[in-house]
Structures are given as structure tokens and as C-alpha cells.
Image (cartoon, rainbow, N blue to C red; front, top):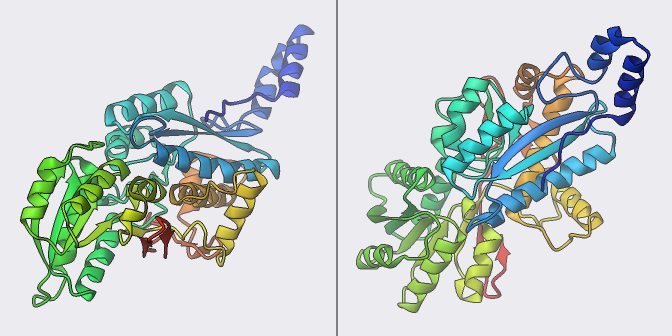
Length: 398
């Protein structure tokens, strides 16, 4: 979905009339009425954001749902009059989860579309590829859908993460593996920045355990991003006789691996991190995926005990999309809600630098049962992680 920047028709008509009667000296004043001190992407009635995400291809579900959740909250805010009278517009470009396309999109968003900020990028390799552009342009890069440590350390002044990282997710997975008495771990991971970030997280988590824990990484095998050809990875994994297989990939690859492993009689435990695409994975494996575990960094999108989830579900219902709740969608929703709080704190005279400074004041901000905390020293808003599991009906439960 693409929302294009709009010009206030009444202001535009006034400019035409003024020039028609020879009052061209009005140009500066009229232009000032429709912009904020010349800040890129900001006018008197709009704030233009840019997003590059997979909107087609094997991981399109993640990009589409992240975008849909953000739009859900931004549309709600716009109906309330926007932020200081400015409506938020989100222009999304498709990168198919490919770094080269993400770079092209980002150059276009910054140089041609002249967006105020970048929002809700999806994926580690795509986000990592655009970091030089972000830092060079000094443009806010808010809430990427990735938990890679390489995007968090060293910290960039312009990059803000709402979600917990893969280090926190894999630490929680390894702790649960140890608690349940499992010992032998195999990691199957994407041969890209995302996969390597997850593998590194598992390795760090194992090293952090007591020396006598007995938990060990017995094998690791990479797979091509978005592949369903998992024969080599399967052979390596099964040969190692693992108690648990930790999969750092997306739903199509993971679904293919789980189904083939089960077909071969594997009876161990499967673990995934949140980027897998939870609902999409549940659809891929169905009831035969019963027992597959996924770590989460967002509240369950059906958990109406939390105010933020109730708000999310209420707005979905109002939009006629009550059955579209999804982890990636609620992540987009919470990211948008966090961003709007930053805009409000930045004040009416909005600039990129004021937004960054304002975001850094968001300490212990309760968005409705989900706490976000930024500071000048930390641009990671949350450390929240919980485990979910696919049940015998193919439904994801907590």
C-alpha cells in the first residue's frame, strides 16, 4: 500500500490566486505556511515516512503484515486529526527481502521522495545494507523488524529498535532447552546476516550457561535464504542426533524442514525465533507441527487482557479485518504507536534532530501493557521475550 504526499488544496489555490494578482512576494510566506522550516518530508498537514519491505516473494507475509499493522494505527491517528494537525503518510516499496533492492528503494525514498524518516524495514540483510545511507543522510530509521546485534552495537544516533534482539530470544530458547533437560542442539540457519545473527546468539547463550550444564552445539548447517531445498541441512542435522533443532530462517524454509524431519521420524524439539513468521509457519505445518516452539518479542495478538492488544483488536474490527490479527501486524501497530509518541514529544516544530532527541526521552513509556524505554545510552526499547507453541489444531498459543 502506498500513500502519496498530498498538498493542501486550499493553500495551493491561495498561492495561485496570489500570483495571479501579481503578489509574488507572497511566495515565501505561503511556502512557510505549508512547510516546517524546510524540514524534509514535513508540511503543514503531513509527515511522509518511507518503508522498504518484502511485499512480494517468499517472505511477503512479513512485509505486508508489518505494513498493515502500522497503517492500522496511523490511520486511526489521522482520523483524530493527526499529530499537531499533520497526518502521517507511509510510502512502502517492495524489496522482496533482497539487500540490493532495499538499497535502491532507500536511495529513492531519501533522494527522490524526500521522506522525513524511514520506518518498519523488514529483515536483517536488508536493514544492514542500508545503514551507510541512513547514517550519511542522518535520517531516523525506526523499528526495523529484525533483532540482529550488528544493527544495535555500535549504536547509531538515528536507529531505534522497538523489539528485543535475537540475543535475548536465543538466550530464552537455550534456557528453556536446558530447563527441559535437553542437551544436544543443532542450528540450521539462513546463509545471510539474519541467520548468522541467530547462530551467534545461540553460541553466546550456550557459553553463558554453567560449565556443567551439558548443553552443547553439536552441529550447524546453513541454507540459502528462502529455499525449500533442505536436503543437505537435513542430512547434517539428523546425523548429529539432536535433542533440539533451532531454526533461524523464514516460514517457507522452516516449514519444509519440519515436515521432512517429521516424515523421517525425528521426535525431538523444534525452536524458532520471532522473525520466522509465526502465523505463516503455523499455516505451513498445520496440525503436524504440533509442539513447534517460537520465541516472541511482541504480546500475543489475541491476548485481549492487555490494553494495547484490545486497542489493536478493536481497530481491526472497526476496519472489517477482525480475523487478520498476526504477530507481524501487531509489531507494526506497536511500532507506529511508539513513533507517534515520539512525534508528540518532538513538538509542533518538527525536525529529524528534534525527533531523535524526543525519542530518547521515552523512558518507561507504557503503551498499554507493553513498555518501551529509550535513552541517549540505549536505542533498544524492549527486552520482552516469551515462548509460544503450535498446538495439535495448528493454532499458536502461549
